[in-house]
Length: 198
Image 1 (cartoon, rainbow, N blue to C red):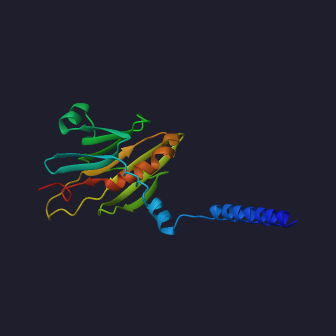
Image 2 (cartoon, rainbow, N blue to C red):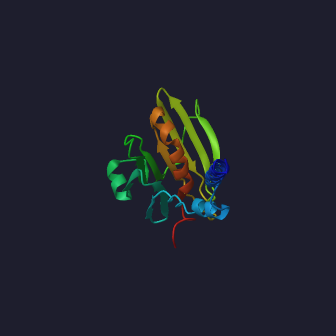
């Protein structure tokens, strides 16, 4: 009888110890400091790659920063004269996925003239100090967009009637997809003698 009692007590203690060890192993957690270290060890996302494109001629200066998913072509004064364009020079840029959605950042010698019928006109101000007006109109499936930049004040007696501007006419379906990129691009634009290097 005593032998049976000893065996029962021993078996009970064995089960109790086994259950305790299983319970304690389930509740083991790494210290909070280790968790924080693991979380902060994640690599930070790299900033998107960009290209800054500039063109200058005499007192004309154009600059724009583009995402690497956009393409561009610089059109010099000589090239624009051959095209018989209203623009004196330009930086053309477009999203690689939509090669027909071409935006022209350029300078034209004439004053800007836009028929305001049906056109939405919005004043804007960029963080770099540039101000101007945005003209938009949707006709059928096309967005007609012109952005005119205000000129800095000229010395008394000097008149420069020309305008720095961006013009484009993307399809509305394409514009919906590229508008966020364009707003970032617009914020990078620099034009005029205030931005040109000495």
